[in-house]
Length: 195
Image 1 (cartoon, rainbow, N blue to C red):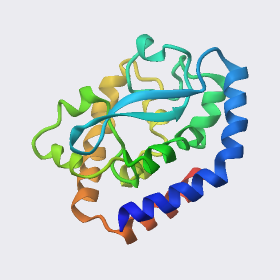
Image 2: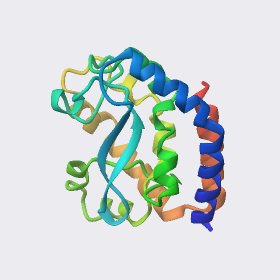
Image 3: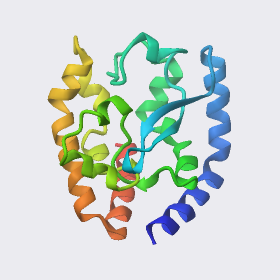
Image 4: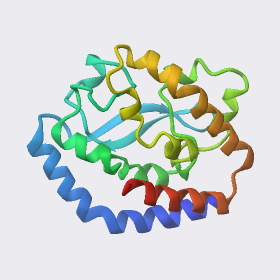
């Protein structure tokens, strides 16, 4: 049932947002050098690697210039990228990942492979479900970049200020998710975008 829900909503979502995606793609291209899309390696269900699709919000080769965690004052973020990140518009292409079965609309946010390699045995339970575009942790840390703003060591700050609670919320979702829960999280996410 969850998979049918994902296919139906992601298909409708893509049909609705494609004109917006076209405009955003043009803006990204005019704003800075580099591709329109960012494809990053992430851990999917059971830890299987897949390429997540996002609108590019950072300078070309940003991964070589810094780590995976990003504060809102990161110099790698482009002008267009600041706006896209504020309203989570960079996440819209992940509807394609959902349609392809690599992600779900709702589920723990997919992590980079290095981060997943450090999971404890209990934390590995997060990988029992498809990663999602949104979840309880995404709502709690909606402004993650602001929490990390001004940190001398963004990676360390992420591990101290965000990671423990994020993993707790993700494990909570895995243990008690349902279609009704997913619909509630989607509604809460839509509201949070405009707050």
